Length: 359
Length: 247
Image (tube, rainbow over the protein chains, first blue to last red):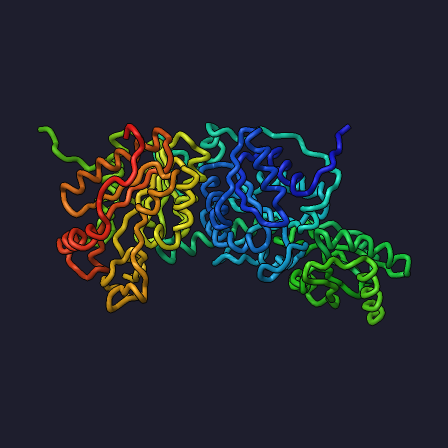
């Protein structure tokens, strides 16, 4: 019988990383993810790990890049404006093919915005912010258990692709408490095993015939294009292997909601309310937003009249939904901005009005 | 016959692509030769900056990575924390370290990271074509200060070594030059000392090396050496600013 423990989101995220064998964490204080920085400062040294409180998010990502090039498994975390500061480093790490696990406990923007939960970082996380052609997988768990499992598995994914991997949860998930089953603790990668496990990492050339050099600069156009094409082969594999969505009642639904993270939890309640009012609804809940689970939209049938994106932003994921739907159904938006969490009743009322026009 | 000079195996076979009279070649060779003589080449991890020496890894025959502009001390921090017993250094110019990267060098020193930082100060942006650096001297011409740096308009040049010497975690701070054979010999000795500071894990070891950029200074290679001696050294005095006991 596996034991459930009640943990605050931010602390559970840290524990998941430690149990995955991560022994390096770099962070800088920013609400609403401070409990994670504090948790790692307490717990990592207890596990023989390294906690670094950096002077800025710029330093965070670049220290993490250093840990990555040296073969360490590193977690970094921040919240929206802090992630913005890191994005030069994301681009750099993609070009240099350095694995890093990035957690965004998002708040609402733009600017300093507010510390209340938001989903207005969708473009930031899926479209870059850093320069150039690069991609970073973005996982969007909706429950604490799913977040713990995602973080636990993300180091393997980052190492497999030699690429940063990101997890986007909002401040609500960082701050709330929920029971979770913590995964089994894995042994960390010992320093003396790095050369064997990650033959590309910098460990000192020793007696190796060739030395490792990790670069993000391409001295000419041919080298750069070759590298970009190589990266995109990798991103193609990610697009084939990583997209994931949870589908609920979509085959029979006249109205299909699309929502991720905290918004999806509200929509689950909305569906119960609307069922009582005689409206057949379904839900596509993306667990990855890059790569976007386009295939999930092919499961919608002739009964579907409308697809509705529910977002805690002015509507960003809706662009990806439009692309996945390819004009087969009208796509509409139900949203709140500014860190306001709509109630299930509020969404239900708008949804009811919306479907009226399409029946 | 006994050879009196040999090329260090710390340098690769690649031909240097730096301009004639540029100080990078001298600085590269000195650092690599010291690491070779100390038997550290196999246990070294270096970080190259943004600027002309972004390609330092083509010449320095050790494992290396590139860092984003100014971030090398942060990158070296990460590397050293994973491999505390390897020799870890950054090699950075004055645009990289003294302008965009001031935060990273200051806080690597605050954390007393056991890394060595080689700071090549030639008082100008080289790779981008001669723009004013924070270290550009008053009156020195640059493409962004064509009449010469003006104290009122542009502020005064920064003394990075003096600033870092005020930080407790900076264990060793010295400024040297490469303008003459005697200065080069002194620089070599200084490199030996900063390497030792890291080997003894005493904190951040910082060596500022005054260097030349004849191309962007608009002088010949020999003139550059004199220009450095006559203009830079009076403003950036040479010497040890801080040293731990026993070094």
